[in-house]
Length: 248
Image 1 (spheres, rainbow, N blue to C red):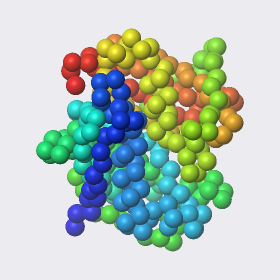
Image 2: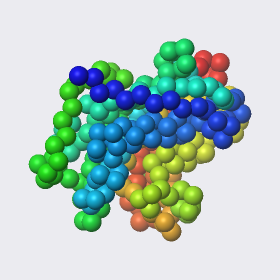
Image 3: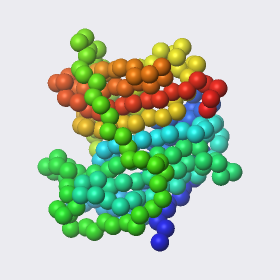
Image 4: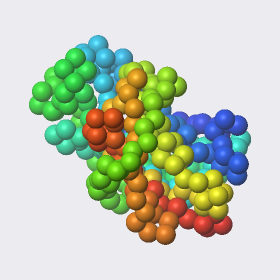
């Protein structure tokens, strides 16, 4: 039985950059919205879990862009859950053009958290039954586990803003990707396009907290970062792989 969920979206003016390409963090937002819609159809959405004191928490995500959707493009997003583990639920995504061309592929790992005690729930601790047949794989490997970049010697802290927060009163997961992109100089961004991004989430930032970046360059066009709060607690790890603008 196929349980692939399909939904359509349009690339709006507020989604795009100077090339008229959709921002990758907006594309991440769209695939996560599709996941939320599918979870609701499966009776495992936000409302279904919230009444039991639970919510979905994104643990890892890996997206590879083959070709960026552009302004006014209509896209088709397909998403499907895969076999779960003790703590982790796997979900993949593919994004297609109107003509059926594959534009982006992504994999993600989710956990269920009890917000009343702030604890990740094991499958054997929950009364609900969640089991899905194995589906196809959008990417050939699991989301990579990233290496931490050590806390910077001279950290520059930034405040969490109200616009960064989501319905759970934490920083929305796509904003970490946006913050990462904003670390690059404009001259670099004008000449390069982000091909691939991986995010490993460790902890959630909240209102009135502050964060700082520790960054390193691992190759000519590959960069890693770790985001810390003001108490030097790791919030998330991010890796980005870029290409020259003419190559995507």
